[in-house]
Amino acid sequence: MGVQPLRSHSTEFRDSCYDGLYPGHIPTTSIQKALLAFGSGVAALQDPYRHDMVAVLGETTGHLALMNLRDMMKNDPEGHTILTERPRIRLSTLDLDLMSALPDGTLGREYIRFLKDNHVTPDSRADVKFVDNEELAYVMQRYREVHDLLHTLLGMPTNMLGEVAVKWFEAAQTGLPMCTLGAALGPLRLNARRLQKLLTVLGPWALQSGRQARCVLSVFYERRWEQSLEDLRRELNIQPAPVITSTSRKRNT
Image (tube, rainbow, N blue to C red; front, top):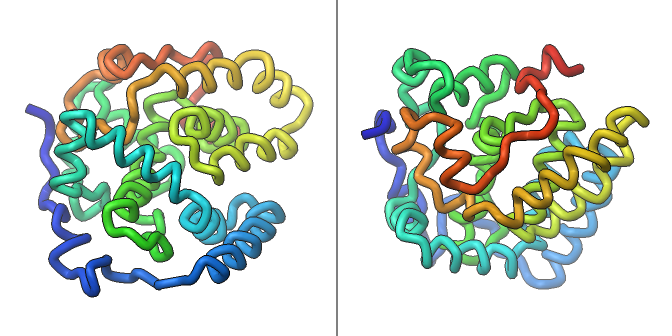
């Protein structure tokens, strides 16, 4: 049995819902969505670190991809459980002390190490606002909250090269337009040495891994903290990165 969350937020999208949707939802027309997509896309191109704009772009352009991801989760027993229970990955739902005490190499210990080394927190992920379907909104929220776990699984740091490699994986895995855009434009921000590493080694590995891996949204990570990263990678059909990298931004800037 893996380390369990301190408390569940599984009903967060339903118990407090209104008008059949979810707290924080902002209804928009097709025209409004198009304008939001255009504006957020321009802002994201100018500054890829504008996570708020990247979030809006994902919500306003990802309907078809979110439906496909939802269907993949429904057709997977573990994914179906996630859609039913609606877990959230937040600081308030994790036992950080217990996860930190797990052996090196376990998912929980390496995830906590990644968060500390890179000074990131799952609470930084924005809540979904513009997805006009409660279930699809949860799928998008789940995608955001497992992003740092993907860095951990793939062994990628949070520098630009690591982020682009993860985006190539996510583009192949999810089909979300914002991931495809990030995968296409991210290399423009790399220097020549890192661009060569991406195009010749990391990129092909990330694309192949994304295509062949089991749907990463269908994994109940909260019940697998004690599982070794090596075993989980084998289970998901993710090959280890061909280039040894640290998952710490401090050692990769």
